[in-house]
Image (cartoon, rainbow, N blue to C red; front, side, top):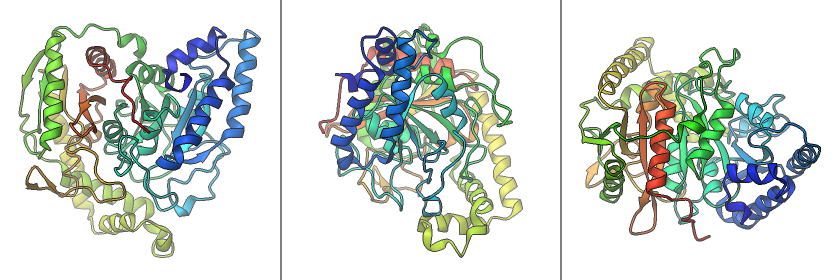
Length: 456
């Protein structure tokens, strides 16, 4: 069935003229029409523009013109990423009529590689409501790239582009049983339209296979002077990196990072997944890194950045803004310059600890999220495994690596007895995106997940 093919398979079929881009697109749009009323994953469907692009892609194939590596493959993007000529709201009433004149840098590269943009995704927000998890529609797909993960998990396109400022690619990937990659900070250039996540924001793919994510990264990675923090392009191919032998890798398994409470169901699945790396010939060691919980400095820094980005809108625009966003902005107003600089200094010291620790290990494993998916539209749990937890206590494993900027991915580790997906996070050394992809691909081969599909 076309809708469950990987992006690389579809690109190959298009290149060999065994399937037409328009046929692929129509199948994806039919799937969207069938399941999106239940999921509410898409806030915009650009069917007409996508069909024009698919026809152009088809003509290029028939004429024998040079085509890109993902030619004719449908893709969706998160609605915080601008798409030329398409409304880009960020889920905010303030931007419900904003139509950008330029594509996000990554989207421009994906279009040049032949992909066909057919829609924009989001999760719970004031404009479009609650998005639901395809494995259990009473539960959340995670945020804030939850619409992207729900779409990929349910067969609405093989590729989605998301953003991750504290876990927003990896958390929904874990909750929806798909693969999510947060590349190294700066690996993918970005000119963020919506401020607040400076220095911690990443753009990356959500896919059903590791190699599809690697193929996307091959397209979107590399420096751009419009983003002065972007990294130069590395030599070699990320897709080829997936074939690297992981035998002999030194792997650290940190079940709770020394400070997190973890749901026993999540822990059991992730412990089994970590053990698979031993069968792959890796040296696996159970560790407690001894790092301090970074939640307070992280939230201080983000609140201050949101205040700087959005406080000029208050109080006039407050009725149009999400109440939780308003609270965050007001909290940022109470952060002094001294508090902010101390938080930044903490990040520097935290990075030094993490970097020193990973001199001993090639990759670090842990659960992606401390809990299974919780109720759609509900607040995250404040008690885990019998312990009271902080506001971010349910997601203690993701935002630390936004602070350090290291590459990190969530692979489907398995499913709970209730049939809910659980993610295992794989964190690499600084700029070692290829190693994270190699470890992810080896795990996928040993414990495949792509044929397990939600029963929508």
